[in-house]
Each structure stands twice: as structure tokens, then as C-alpha cells.
Image 1 (cartoon, helix red, strand yellow):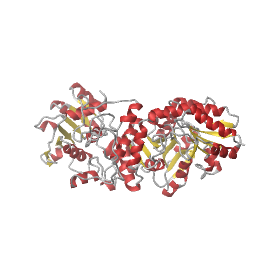
Image 2 (cartoon, rainbow, N blue to C red; image 1 turned 60 degrees about the horizontal axis):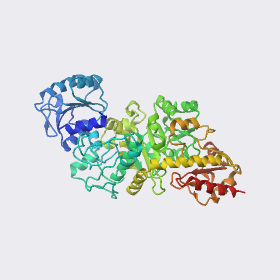
Image 3 (cartoon, rainbow, N blue to C red; image 1 turned 180 degrees about the horizontal axis):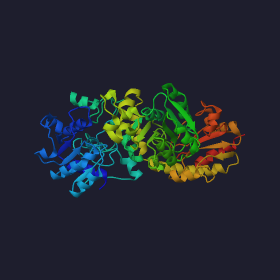
Image 4 (cartoon, rainbow, N blue to C red; image 1 turned 90 degrees about the horizontal axis):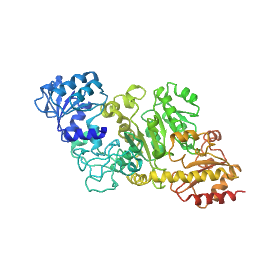
Length: 594
């Protein structure tokens, strides 16, 4: 059985839980979990020798599992891994149906014992997080449930995969682009995600409010932190990348800031590709220096140079684009991930140009993925946005370099995000702390428009790439074009990398170099009549721009050359019109160049 189905089935069958290691300290994860599960209809019996005989959250605490007089469905263990084999034997002896080991607790021997006694077994997970994830509770974090359903979400009990009104699954991006994260509205039955155009959300009572502010249970507090419309978008984007969760923000630049903020500190350095989008280079090398952050731009295709750069003690992260804007060079993500992880740092990949339809960087070792959703994901030039997507793959507790995640947070009464939320710690921190304090919040309307755009993403990306191939081949043969940068051409230095990392083509954004230099580039842009001259990419419409005079104008000439955008360069973003019409417009414009 798939793990998400197993978890849903266990929770659906469970009524009474014995919690081994329950704590009376409200700041501890076990207290969070107990309180949450009780609120959602489970009876939770605490087990802790130090508290035996005392009442905890309305339940008498017992010294051991065998001392509990009631039948137990599930044993939830908050103990060290080495204690679990003996506890598994005790759980079997009292007839428990399921054995659950909390985040960070792993035991192969306990798993074998559970199997030998016919108990369902789950480890390294939290029932609080899994219940809220599978129940469709849209709170902080944008956690993806891993399941789909055409039935209304239940805020009391997750559905069972074995009954009507239950769950479905898919690994196909065409299905996920439409269904992931979206279930019919619990109150109205609306099949389309509503636009929750509100600044704040009602508390049931003071206890509910406190639980939300303490991060003890998921839910919405204030629009700067989370919104149900945005949460659906976050879940869908996480699903498309096979990630654990996402945080959507106001723009692609905001996504880079939000992704880096938990990892950086004054004196820390970002190692980044020198072929990034020009605006990113300015953000990294100028704006971020006002935070005390430094950026070292390197040629990421020189792996020795990358290895040398990340080996310095002040380095916090390696950052690159899967498919670069504007010249279409392709990163060797797998090798960059190996270099980053060998240095004990995460790899962040900007996947804006490729989208999950063409490339899923997490499959090649990327830990965090960022997007400007303004581009292909939204796809219609009508909604600004950005996203941070977390694969949940980096172990923040193993390093002292990321105290925001691995050390107690005084703003939340000393909880440690990576301990309390496990693999969801990073993305929870992005919502609970970064959005709280920096505030680059995505509007519900733009979240809605992006969700609508995502439904046709696979179809659009295939058409974008099909058209791009035809246009690139036409321009590659044109007498007034010196060079075409499209990685799908066999002459491209990135051809083999494109074959490895990109599906359905080599992208629809590329540059061309005009033999006539700067003036020829200007004339090509101004002579187009169908193609739109503007500073965007990823639109349904074909777009054109002269980077040296616009998007990369703020860079020095040396930086422009390093980024692949010299004075004679023109950038094209090929749309989904008929390819013959795009080619005809370019052909006419080229003929009019003096």
C-alpha cells in the first residue's frame, strides 16, 4: 500500500491512542500533538513514568503501556530510537493495531516486530502533521497531502482510501496540474477554489487563537501569513515537483529572498551562477549586501571552480538556474547537488524557465526550488507571483550553520522548527517567520489566476517547445543571425545536458546574436508587428526584448558578457501562436534591418 494511503487508513481506523513520552510541557512537540489529536476527535492516553497518576489534558497518565486498562488502537512513540524495539513488543502484547514512531525516531527492529505481530507501522512522521495534511486543513506551510479527492474535505477525520468519498492518487503531471491541492470547498461544495479575499480569519475561542499563534495546530490567522486560496496553489506546486510543501509570495524576487533568509546571516556567502537573470545578479550582489550577505558569482559549468568556491567556511548555499534566463544554458544539477552536499550546504535551483513539466530538480538532488510564477506557471501575463518549494531533503539539524531552523526560536517560546516539524521545518519557517516579518505576501486574486493557469501548463509547455524548435531552426539558418543560443540545437554546448535534464524540448526562451550588432538588435525588436516588445517571458504570446538596453541594463558590460547578453543579443520568449505566424513576423523584421 502507498504510504499516504497507509497513513490515511491508520488514522481512519484509530480512535484511541497511547502516547509514550507524553510531556506536560506545552512547548514540547508531544504536547502539541496530544492537544491537536484530542481536538480532532481522538482519545489520547499519556504514558510517562515520571507523570504516572497525574492528569494530563484530562487523561490519567500511566507508567507503561501494560498499565493502561483500555483497548488501544495506536501506540505513538516519543522516545529514542534504541528504546523502540522493547516498546514495540509491549505494543504487540496489549493488542495495539498500529505502531507509530515520531519524527526522527527510526527503528528497523521495531518495524520487524510490528510486521511479525500484524501491526501497521509508520516511522519518522508526526500524526498531527499527517492528519492535517490528509484532511485538507489549509493552514501554514502549504503541505501537499500526496492524495487527490473530488469530495469535500473533512475537518474532523481524513478519508479512507477504501471507501466511497475517499482518496485517489496520480503521478501524472497532467492530472496533478488540475487536481493537486484542490478539493471541493467544505462549506459550499464549490469545485473551483474560491478566492478568499479577506485580511483575517475568525478564531473559535481564545484557546484556538493561542494554539494557532503557538503553531500547535494548522490554520489561518492573518492574510500576511497564509490564505486558503494561496494554500491550494502551494500544495499544487509542491505536488508538481514531488516536494513536501511550498510557500507562495508576491514575485520571483520575493521567492529568492524568502528562500535565502532562513539560511543566511551577516557574513554568510551565496555561491551563485554568473549566468543568472540580470535582476537576480543585481539583487544578489547589491541589495543583499545591505543585509550583510555576500554573493560570489562563478561559472557553474566549471565544476572545479564551484567546488573551490563552496569549500569556504562562510558559504551557506549554492544557487543556480536549471535553464538560464536569457541564454538558455543548462545546469548539471546532479553534479552541483553532489558538490553542495559534500560541502554540507543545500542546493537551490531556480526552475522558472523549465517548470516542473520540463524538469523536476528535486529528482536530481536539489533541496529547494524557486519560481517566478509570473512566467510560465501562470502563463498569461496577468498575475505576479513567486514560490519557494521545499523537497524536505536537507537535514537542518545536522549543521550548526542554520540556527533559524536548528536552534530554539525565542519568538515561538523556544520551539525548534526542524525538530518540531521535521521535513516540513523549513517551509513552515518561511510562513511563520519570514512572511510574518518581511511580508511579501501573494494576493489571493493572483493565487487564483495562477491556479487557473496551471491547469493548462502541460499543454502549453509542449506547444511552447514545439514552436521554439521551429523558430530556433529558422533563425539558425538566417543570414543576418550570427548565433542562436537554444540548447536544443546539436551545435549547442548544452545539448547533452538538455537531453538529460529537460523533457519535451529545450525551452522556449533563448537569445539570438545579430551580425549587425547593437543597432541591428534594436531594429529587430522595433520592426516586429505580431511579437510584443516587453520585459517578461513565459506568456502565451511571443515576446521580444533587447537585454542590453532593458533587463540587463543595470549590469556592467563585463557582467552582461558573462551572463551571455552582449550588445548584439536579442531575447525571444516563444509563445503558443501558430509557428508559421511567429516565423513570418521575425522574417519580415529581419528583412527591414539596414
